[in-house]
Length: 555
Image 1 (cartoon, rainbow, N blue to C red):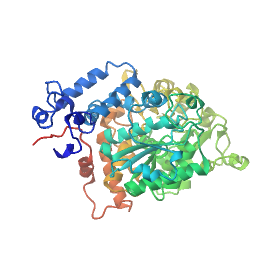
Image 2 (spheres, rainbow, N blue to C red):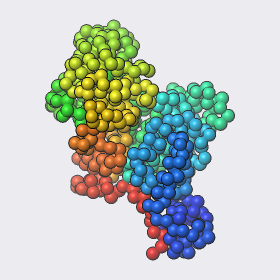
Image 3 (tube, rainbow, N blue to C red):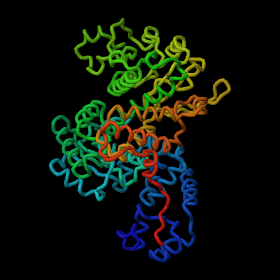
Image 4 (spheres, rainbow, N blue to C red):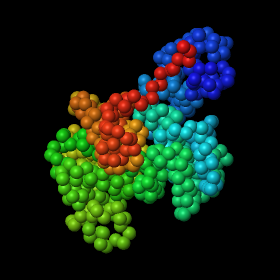
């Protein structure tokens, strides 16, 4: 038996193994040697023809959720063909494999579940988590995507059905970042759900109990993290996905001092937003320190983004963090965050205090824009409505020659404004970046295709970089390196079309460069366990990236 198929004892089992199956790409010689003759139709297709066949069939499916299910079935049948199809048709398939389709997939996960992919750890497994982890057959896992399904974007608490987001993120670590599929493990932590409709749904596949919290929740997470590091090594990347904002920040703080912990909903969004700002800066004019940033929404995500931005400004201009924060402002549901409010309100969250400036107050976004005259307006879900009204956008254009408008809230029903609305209200002066994909449109005789501020530009390359450098921690310095690479990847053609990032089909190339910079920075700053001297990190990153081309099974 050839090395790759030692675990397969018959031709039928080989064809049923998603990891080893090549379908009709098995050569005639392979069919003879591996006892496949008669188990396949006579024709032999090379992989490129298989890709054409798959995409032709997929395009006949009209429902995106069903397309996702069809692709999931392909993954189960033929892993390498799945990734070849995705690689060759990246821009077409990314919205199917990730946002926004994956959210709806999570909503229907109970009906769609077919075969296990990843691990399920429940509150009932306390005391035996490590034994459960040993059931996973791969020992050399590099990255783990963890979710408890409490805050699936736009849908809220979906309990164990949030596993769909962990599976989707794991897929992108390979499709965009080049990690081998065996290197990434999705895990769902089931502590119950407060979604009563799910608890009453006879097809719900999780625990039928209210969500567990407090000390019992923390003890389970501690046992999971300890077990993962014991099973897969202390340098395994722990990627927290779709936890509530409160838990995400708390867990990141809890584990980032002794684990390679990363939260895409905080650090990934912060790094991608910073990348957009760096990319837009030449058009905005002036230095970063001269810009004025107004965040509409002062939750954990906005604060994390502002903190990374302030750190970057501080390092770029050689000033203190308090000085870097002087031109960063927040408005929450009660109005502009000011020092007066900090003194009067006992319940003002601590993460807002560094941005509570000594100034007069403002009750609305429009009043804040008139008062502060920001050059960048960044929406991170303040209200469930179109927050950036025509009046707000016109005020931005009045006070800035080239205002940066970032409507980052997701899903599309919650976004602060659309790209077209921003262009029309500012007479085409703005630079627009959305949290959701914008449909290209024509304005003043040119096609506008603004960028989506998607963490897909950051986390796959970050994961690869940490892997090749044997990274020991995730620090802001690595996130800023990633942001600079992404920002510098946009071409003049991209900029001319109103974008700040390259087209998504280029993300694998961007990921290789992100990985190289992250690995180099980790090595230089003592965040790498690799011995020896610096190396050609870009060459190493590219050599690590998974190639879905079929392997020959005969000499």
